[in-house]
Image (cartoon, rainbow, N blue to C red; front, side, top):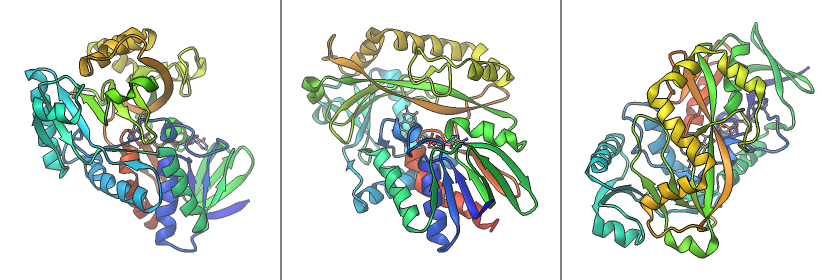
Length: 400
Ligand SMILES: Cc1cc2nc3c(=O)[nH]c(=O)nc-3n(C[C@H](O)[C@H](O)[C@H](O)COP(=O)(O)OP(=O)(O)OC[C@H]3O[C@@H](n4cnc5c(N)ncnc54)[C@H](O)[C@@H]3O)c2cc1C
């Protein structure tokens, strides 16, 4: 049996940033990261919008609000210092009518409360910044940026490797036992004993926690974010990032247009209930995931709520008919025409749902004597990753 001071499960951004943060603090710590895929960042951390958010959406006082503002600043600095592609081009959240202007005012209040740099601009300034966008006002977040999220995770992992971490790839953690002064981790190829375990398993965070009797009041519900993108000849319609005013009752941002670090323009993502934790394609159905999801009452409470069903219906429409995505995007960018959008990649968001059917919005961690479970590293956890990893490394510290 191999022994380590620290084992981290999950080679997404949270796992990679946590290994690095722990080793930076404790040089010589014997640490490993276990990832079941042959490479890092195969799931959420490599399939996302690649936007550095700035902290106008989060309610002041939440953990996420605290981490997103600090995380945004540190992430941009990290990218500059470590040659991770970054384009600092600003985000605009556009209001079409007075009702949406009220949403912008709420976002401005949240941004001010969180210490984010945001201002409301009039239609004239909006058109100077994004000539093709339609709206009567906008919230401008000049620090919003796009970056290479996969490159970022690989860079964090490389730093961890240089500090001595061992990476076990293509090894799935199958079982966990916490006993005495540590944890026994059964992977598909070996047994590892660690003094401290951090689980950052994204879409499978609940399953690993449940093995130790933790996180029992939660389940993971996967939401697929499907993207389209603008054909190359029409990319000039968008300079940076154009978002709609969000529905503040749901943690999804709505179909937006976002210029990536490499010059493409993504349109999306939707947020449709996925019929499997890795159902990246709508034709993929995983019956055992569906039965597992449907066995728990939190799912039914969510699913049966009228508000959720209304949103789900609209999201399915967008998933099935590209015309519905075009129509939503045209509200932001009227110049869009049939044929301007082509289907692009999809990502699946690991959304924690509580027993009473609520979508958990804040970052959520549960701890036992020897283990730390990241149950809800929900969007924008890429942006939050550096302060979040520091927080997890403090929890590790207490156990070493
Ligand atoms: C469509 C979409 C768009 C987004 N856009 C943004 C954005 O623009 N900006 C932003 O800040 N955030 C964004 N996010 C959120 C962000 O991507 C996630 O919050 C973040 O990547 C979560 O990281 P993670 O490390 O927790 O999870 P993941 O990246 O999913 O990593 C978890 C890892 O654990 C591994 N794993 C799971 N089970 C096991 C096991 N049993 N054994 C070993 N390994 C295991 C998985 O293979 C995976 O690699 C977006 C998310 C989605 C889905």
